[in-house]
Image (tube, rainbow, N blue to C red):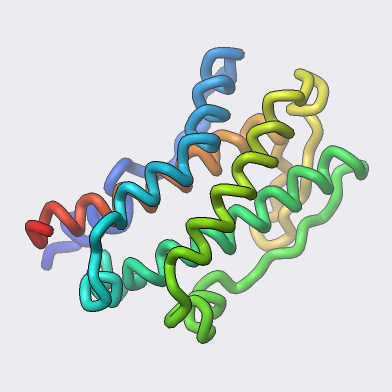
Length: 180
């Protein structure tokens, strides 16, 4: 497989690109993406059997099961990070080893329904939080010690909008390639 092919499998919708200006309509679309994710992810895995869930979405990538659990792990962290940024002055967030989390027993073996249910409830709360944030709230920032970047919450909303769509695309692309 060529390097470009692997890159396309890694980033089927491209990498996140922050727009020069985050307008109210862009932010509203990102919030909608976050709110829609649980259903989109549920639809993406609908009807997959045990063997299909154990299939990596790309060579060297996570299985579909691990991908679903990763989204839940990531978005739990995201929700917590938003709440920290809303209640503290530029908090330093705690990074986590997502690759190692995916290798833990729950990431490799738990039923996907557990993470789908978790995401449904989590995104209801996160969606409510996002819809009630002010412009000043979205300008609040957090610091990521691994990347050494400080990001406002409006950019973080875009990153997590992309993150959800990115992983749904992994699964949908795999289904298309495998004719599932």
